[in-house]
Picture (tube, rainbow, N blue to C red):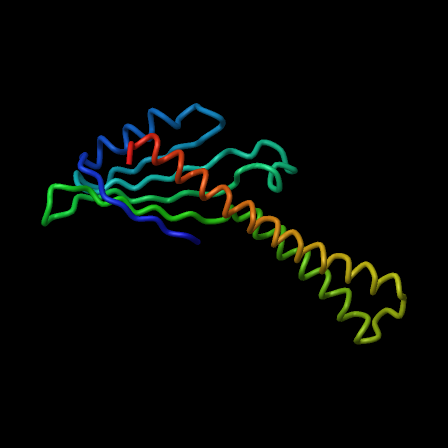
Length: 155
């Protein structure tokens, strides 16, 4: 998870309405807003994945944010956190656990087939490479989201 904090001179409702009007309906973005109080607005931005293979190729980051009024000054604090989509984490863990399971079965003599060892090793390596690939895409997509939000809010 990565965090990003900044301040703006607009009110929380103006900032959230500007984000919502710019992102809703564009490029499969989903924008959810929750107005808790007059001085606090929580929001979530994510890009809808329509097909299973899009988990590896598209932007599947969940952006959570809080916009609240700063008391000493007439500014608004914006706190944004970026997290992986739960399905991408699940995909990595399944590959790694299955690979370790096949290797453990060989060690415990449950199966003496050398193909089982190769298959387990391949699943383990695939899970590791998949994790590295998703982390690289995560960093790139976080940078893209920061640029997009900066342009919308004119930071």
